[in-house]
Length: 231
Image (cartoon, rainbow, N blue to C red; front, side, top):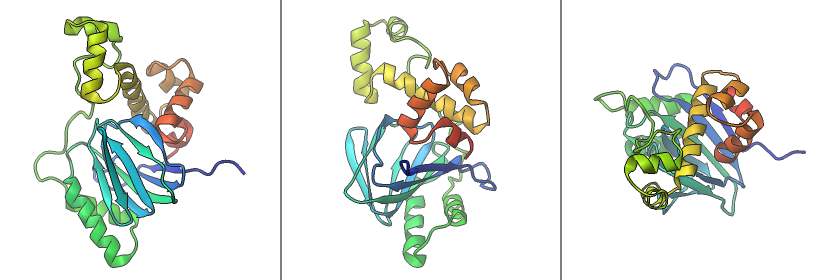
């Protein structure tokens, strides 16, 4: 048998535009390299222990606990000694009061011992912020466009390439080249959710071909573009 599927993603209906997508993680090898999302990520653990390095700090959550990763925050996940089962909610930045939503999930989990999709969406909506609907754009704000070369971005900032790269990495936690790749992968994620063909998505986001997109996408998000698009 092949390697078991660890990540799965769904786009919920009837969430009023609040939850962009839901994800499940199940397995032992749950490590992912440094990446970020355009959405807020709320992770709630059902079994095992989830471990993240977020902006350089180690964060852990056990069964019945959760972690909030703000949109645009570079992070990576680590493997543990036991199998993990958890749920991820991806939501527009700032739309929900994340700590309160996680506390609501924990209360429901302790009271009922379960957590269904309807429970997730209901509890999230109970903690929607009263003002606004989240940021209009979830793109990370930088002093360069995602498609700039590092040299061009450094020139526009009036800095040397080396100095710009050092300052960029200190501020964002990743080199500018890696950041640019993640921006392109997040754009691909958006297009795939809209149902665009994978080959067209690869071309539109600057990847050499469909295979190149596939390798980078699976490394960052744990699934192939095809499986993600079918979610």
